[in-house]
Each structure stands twice: as structure tokens, then as C-alpha cells.
Length: 271
Ligand code: SF4
Ligand code: SF4
Ligand code: SF4
Image 1 (cartoon, rainbow, N blue to C red):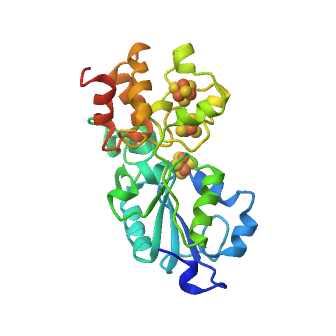
Image 2 (cartoon, rainbow, N blue to C red; image 1 turned 135 degrees about the horizontal axis):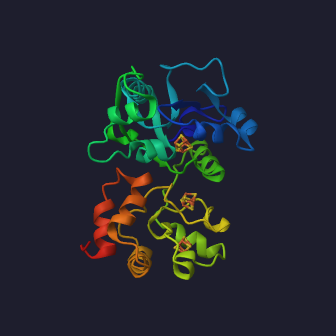
């Protein structure tokens, strides 16, 4: 997957930044990172609609950053086209990685009913789909979580590709960063419903540093990490039952295959 070593010192890897159904917040974050001018000099921006009117679909790129969930037939077509023309595909942000908040529809609340409730009957004519993560449809090489992703992680990913290496995923929970930041634990001390123990780190406990409980925007931590065994049990002690924690985790993690096994581990298979 190395980029530089295959094309020499003067190589400027071609980058594409694309949006499926999303709020465009991840692209905006990438467009406004402090070192964007240095990045632009190091790479060739083949497509990035937010910053370049010369952008277009269908051109070959070394790295495609794809924001948003697959929520329409057009999204699906575009995603397949992007994959076909990319050497490396990165799912950028919570919508692309986990489907985002738009992907959580319960029971009979399918996307058609939700369209009708939000916009009115017959108002939406596009061909919709139940919103799903990018990896449900194409091979994803790397996942960059967050809503939106953190600036230092964006820089880390881009730097890793420029150096011909690859970005390491994080496999520990927000609690680790929260404690390192010197925060007191609002789950233990105030009984706040914080999802830090079961959420993938990388945001430096952003919300906790403002005394706001984590709602899991970076998605569930990989199943089976050590912290989760000891600390997540606090949910039970603080009176948050399985349904409550599941509902909170589903905001950003409805499609995570380990959601129920994780809940089993916290609640011992009980309700
Ligand atoms: S992950 Fe968050 S910031 Fe990025 S497109 Fe989705 S809703 Fe917007
Ligand atoms: S449960 Fe929340 S407040 Fe407590 S250490 Fe973990 S992230 Fe911080
Ligand atoms: S603390 Fe939780 S909700 Fe806040 S940015 Fe980090 S992962 Fe997202």
C-alpha cells in the first residue's frame, strides 16, 4: 500500500475526498486543518468538491477519503465508482465508519417512514435506502472515526500515507484518555450515563473535558479490551440497564456486530 516508495521523491500522491449522505462536517474539518496549505503542497488534490471546482468523479486516486453513509442508490453507485478508482479507501468519520445517526432506524421505522415524518408524504422522490456504513458495500482499507474526526488523526493518516506506512487503529476506550487528561469520572462520581468505557479513544476525551458525558461518537471500542470488563460494569451499579445502554450506544454504533456481545459482557447476558 506504500505510495511514496513506488513513485520516487517527487511523487505527489493523488487524493480524492468524496461525500455520500452526510452533513459535510468531516470534509469541512479536513479543509480547515491548520496545515492544509502544507498538505496541499505535498499531495495532488484530484477531487475535493469543498475546496476545488475542478473536482470530478471517476478519476484514479491513490487515496480516497469517503465521508457519509450509503443512504441512496446514487450513494451506492458513487461509492462503487470511487472504490474502482482508488488504491486505498479510507472511511472518513462516524457516518462512513458506522453509518452515523441516520442509520439508526428501529422496527417499522424504515427510511420511507422517516422521510414521510420529516419531510411530508411524497415529498422525497430520490431512491432512498436504509442508511448503512461504507464497509457494508465495498472493501475499506482504513477507518478514521469521529464526528467529525480529530485534526491530529487526520494529519496522522495523511502523514502515514505520505511516508509509505499505514495508520494504526486505536483499540482502547475513551476512559484511558479521560484519566490521562486528569478528569474526575462523572460516571462514578455523578452517575452520568457516560459511554467512555465502551467507546474507541482518539478524541482525548473531548466531551469529558467539558463535563459532558460521552455519547459514543467514535463508535464501540473493539470487543474484548481489558478496561471494558472492569469499568463498564459500573453501568449496572449506577442503574443503567441493558436497554438504556443499548439505545445510547446505537446512536453511533447501531451497525456494530459486537454491540450485543458487548452488552452480554456488561450485563452478563441478563436484561
Ligand atoms: S461523521 Fe459527523 S461530522 Fe462527519 S459527516 Fe457524519 S455527521 Fe457530519
Ligand atoms: S466513564 Fe466517562 S468520565 Fe469516567 S473515566 Fe470513562 S470517559 Fe471519563
Ligand atoms: S468524548 Fe465521546 S462523544 Fe465526545 S468526542 Fe469523544 S468519543 Fe465523541
